Length: 68
Image (cartoon, rainbow, N blue to C red):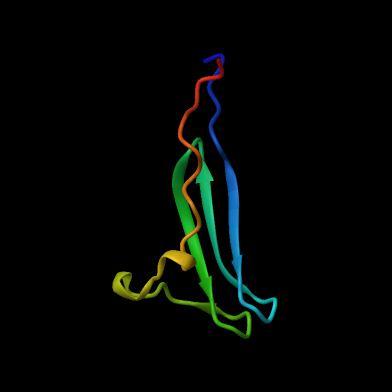
């Protein structure tokens, strides 16, 4: 639709030491998948939901906006 925009792609969060902390993939504005890593860069299991803080979760893609 003309005038609407949807975000796609990869959101990455980094540890202070420069290693990847997590990656989140979105397609057409919808969550597709995510991976988590330890501070040494090795892949880690997803943390329990209650242990994830807001700073660990990337912002959702912008909602559809109409250009005026």
